[in-house]
Length: 317
Ligand code: NAP
Image 1 (tube, rainbow, N blue to C red):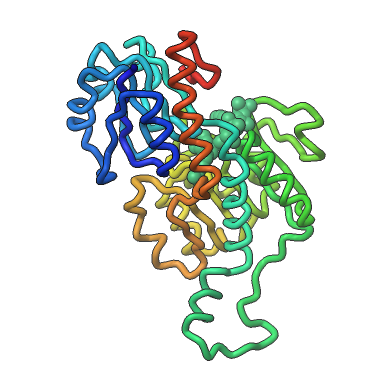
Image 2: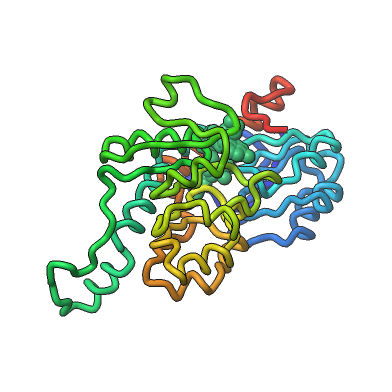
């Protein structure tokens, strides 16, 4: 039986499955392991089932024992793992695509709605009670007829586009490559970021964090947005330069923001906390029972497939 280090707690039914399939080392207190502890615990292991809270950088991967042959990440994103170093060490890295698309797109749509319709201020006022209704009380931006720019029209981006279209939004997108017309489903393609941003009354960031996308939304690119645009991010915090976005919010270049992900999360930039027009969530994208179960089961199946066949369809390096 293969020995697997499972770095964070999984839902109970998934831990039962892992126990059946592997000689599993569980993290019963769900503590966040230091890189040193993670390396120590992986001694004698054949694989690691990691989560996005594990920073598997080059140094950490180089210290892993020779026995480790697979890192199965419990996420579709893999910005927490140095893929090149893993490849050099002969370690396969896998992810959990598809099964979290719907849940994450739901949060992506919630961010758009929450930011456009001033949900943070509304919740605060409702909790305080005694608000005074008037014709212009907490007036927000209507989605119907508004242009939605999707940066990264992949699985999650396309699902957000579908829902947003049903709400009457007009969809624009930018990827490095143009989609087939059935996947575009009427969306307008822009082959560069600047053109997308100039058409984005609302921006939804849905691309992966990578060397290319780090700080893609920055002081310069924010200026391409229309005055009073709304910026939402359901992908990864690394794509946004926080200071630039907070500055744009301060001077009302950006009307409101909706964020699920942050640089250095859970320690988000305090500049976001002071803003009434910041609709912020604590990285809830895939957080439904169905999705977290499907993700963990897929992460386990990826390890099984790898040891049975020497390969895995969800290999990313
Ligand atoms: P996906 O299907 O791979 O889609 C990614 C899209 O981004 C693709 O259309 C890709 O198109 C585009 N892209 C990649 N690099 C780009 C670049 N440099 N410039 C412009 N576009 C680029 O991935 P997904 O399943 O939709 O997931 C997207 C991301 O969502 C994940 O990487 C993850 O970080 C994040 N996520 C967040 C949560 C959460 O809890 N908030 C949950 C799940 C996922 P091209 O290759 O043609 O450029």
